[in-house]
Length: 179
DNA sequence: TTCTCGATTGTCT
DNA sequence: GACAATCGAGAAA
Image (tube, rainbow, N blue to C red; front, side, top):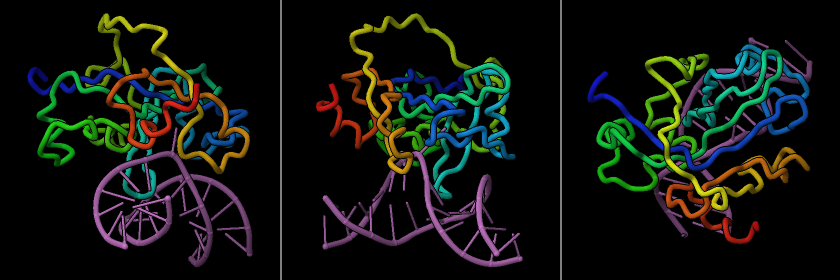
């Protein structure tokens, strides 16, 4: 694996509370083949295909039988930029490399088959690299692209590292008027 | 079995 | 700013 590592620092996430959140696939206890993994104990990945094109990378976060997850929307490339460019087919290093959930999953080489992978495994893991985040920079805002969820779409369940250039595109336009 | 629609992105006007 | 692309999951019949 040496030399084949791609690492990113997560700068944007969204929380999905399965039981009460209409924006969640597991809303109201819905349990299907696809969402089954959300009911597993936290620490595993939930990756699925959206619009037939884009892969979404989620982290299952709660206890067994509680379908909560966090969508990783955007991140800052730390290591293996060349490989990410290869995977996404982009020529230059640009923010869109890992900005936006679809791009991020692509850059990291994540596909639906990786659903259920433990995030403590060798191939895929999340760790603390000691980066010191100023808590004042962490902001909560309404989520993106979930307008259909009614009132739940207004919940401030999106968390961003404000000021990061890697926040996804549409959000950059909106980021100033939330707080 | 069939139909509808989405936790998005990129391109066109 | 608006809209098409694209396919699998979920719901309905």
